[in-house]
Image (tube, rainbow, N blue to C red; front, side, top):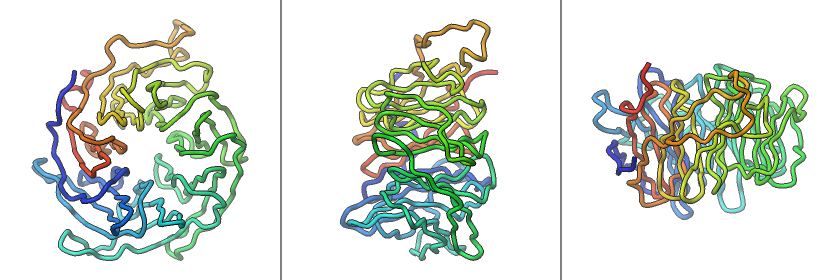
Length: 350
């Protein structure tokens, strides 16, 4: 099923953008952070809140940010903290920022810089907070390395507990932290998807010869992960049986750029692509190892596509479910268009 957007449009972003993230720690409001990456203008971070009536998106805070924002992640246990990976000319890096207590759309208060992730020999690609709850460690990933940091926000310092050079033929493009195991993190690149044990910094498993753009663990089922793989589409994997995916979804007409499991209804999977489309999928998330059939081939669902949101003029790089209200998601296209949609009509019936 295809159709234009019937969602709520936010009109505050003036520049190009790729990054949007749910503010999981705000349990009272549906909130998102979005960051811009203009080459010539001073970039901005917008704190966007859905009004109590769910009729409009409100700018709760507007903050200037040095450099283009290439990755954005909200702290899962403190709604005033977020990390940003940035680039400015030949300079790049990553910082944890703190939103000031007194903020509002009428002014542009300064973000407070808490910590920076220094010492990376290569370009930083992402900063990961453990999604499973409060945790005093953060991961930063560059093109060849994984750094595990101990954070002490009161003293505003970071300490690299451990770091490891990752043995890959191609540069790492991103990573994802297992919400079920704080000692397990996965990285992906042009040719493989690899899992690492943070205690030993050793590789535990891998899926080779796949070009992964994005990945997302199933938040409700261990060992299950979805990958977005350029023209191929979306694969669901059981990491206990990594030789072949147990679900194949066709993805997008062009590159499939991002994929996200719904935080509560894990059969619902969201994806976005460079075909200016957001797709909502309904897929069985029970793998072969969880069933009695033992089928050893991929399962291609006949009608997995529930709805396509096509009211975009540019590539859609950013998608994020709301943790507070799992029937809502936000999307961000390259031209700075933020839309919040409801999938209430498509939720699986109990």
